[in-house]
Image (cartoon, rainbow, N blue to C red):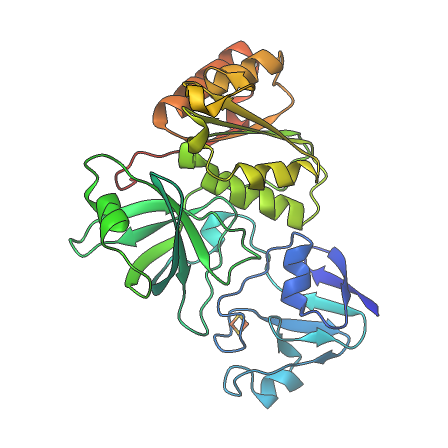
Length: 337
Ligand code: FES
């Protein structure tokens, strides 16, 4: 059975099923309500029921007391509707609304989809979840007191494990450590979420994504989030690499095509063994070749600094892309400022 939920003061509304939590359903419809543990423990998701009744769900008694319930409060990560609801809570729509936290995590799984790319799956302690916006990054805090930035590749709704894509950089001490010493069950510490490279959901403009190499990671997070919330804006994803193996999760991008996301892979130095029949050259050039006018678009670019730089320069000067519709995250392989 479906119920209607209205959020005050924004007056945003969505429909939800009786077996969903208010938080789950709100996130699914693109309304980023505050949360942390998603487990009835921390109280971050606490909000007010202005109208309607809920099943409060399993939660820690001290986090939501009987007196608070009597005063109309509920934990939205646990509460399920018993009627139509009007709720009052703050919606998160800019990165500064999300607290930056320092947390430990355990390496749950390591996968090597290409010779020089490692995918890390990180598990947070029980009762902890990381709230973030699709496209943001975290800083892994290393023992030498430095921080190494990596984009989150999973979408916010899919937060059981945090996913990082790491390229093995020649001379990069930390990436060397990841490739040669890091093992499952090791403990890491990180700080996050950070960064302003996230999907602007208040726009209706079509989107072009441009990624080079592991710049794929935050784009993956954004596209999976967009598909999850049923975003209707046209999306075209360009992924550039030197050789075929650099497009290490091509299957994933091809799956998105079935959901309406156009995918254009581009190789600049394909190997004979790649037997490549597709587009060649630089990835930003492929966009220039396909789009004579970007004035009505948003562009999200992530990857090597040189790719981000030329994309910004050429899209704004040659194709009329407004400066403030270009969003980027350059992988500098050093701590970000
Ligand atoms: Fe922690 Fe709901 S109690 S998110």
